[in-house]
Image (cartoon, rainbow, N blue to C red; front, side):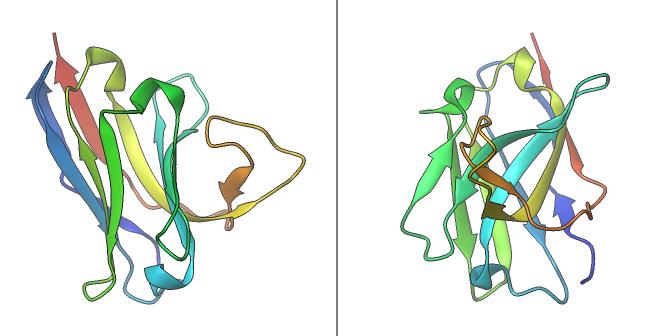
Length: 129
């Protein structure tokens, strides 16, 4: 499958908002559960938000609950992450990926894990204090 293409990152002040997007030229995103992950240098990539395939269920890491919202536009094959009340600790490179459930895994998004070992280039979000 083609790589995910993330966009919309940038520099924002603490307390501000940003919406990032991702799409894929070959993969129909509405046929998968999808998630956003983020990574800072020296740390592992961690789940941030997940949207079930049906779109009826969402899952969020504890540190973004109430501030971030994941959504999908099937017509445009685009996944979004609306981020409000941003904090300096949200600074990271953000990635999106199709996900599935691994009952042997328990992370920030519970048992949701990336389906493929393939990542886009990500989009950088930097929050200044």
